[in-house]
Image 1 (cartoon, rainbow, N blue to C red):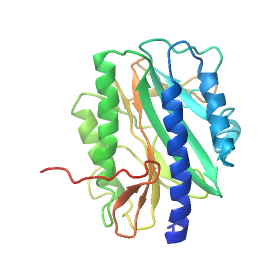
Image 2 (cartoon, rainbow, N blue to C red):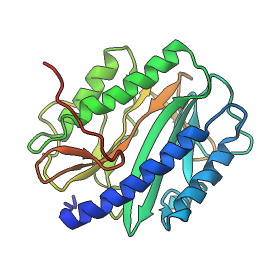
Image 3 (cartoon, rainbow, N blue to C red):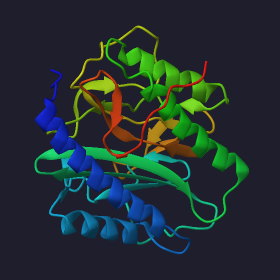
Image 4 (cartoon, one colour):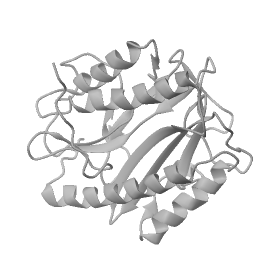
Length: 259
């Protein structure tokens, strides 16, 4: 079942999203060569609890941390560790969620650690832009396939692999609600979009092939071919005007693309 949110509920989700935005901004500023991903995890939990919110990833189905910290060929769900020391040139994806006043928010970004290669910089840039290509299609009356198709078409135009085994999702009082939000698809196919829908849209784009594998820790997903992967995510709402609103990027206005 898809749960549509009313104006009051969307207002609460905006507050949750705004707090997560601030947390991720602070985390982004803290990233530097020589630090461990465990240090980032501790910092994220401190920031979230300081504002009387709850880290939604921690203990979710047994997950042992506040953030997912995925390095280079790790697609998602990388477990923070004292043994994972960030190096100059690494590509790091941070995924984080929190609960504020009972409402969830979920967001992710990918950055280079220090100076990175031009090809890795381009991958990160294309992943982010693919997100915005998709979200511009998240309007009343369109379909989930319109979002996925826009993401897929843009990313594949650069020769990148769009991860198939993992998708975005609905979100609200639960971290994962219906529907699933694939990063690939056909225009006009899938669930029709309506005001009040809240979705976590999250393209995961690999430099090489789209096939993935799970590591022995039971969480970390990596690219099968060892290629670098990038991840970008925001929680969005289709607002009362039938237009997409980024709840985890307050103040950001989507503009129409030039034809």
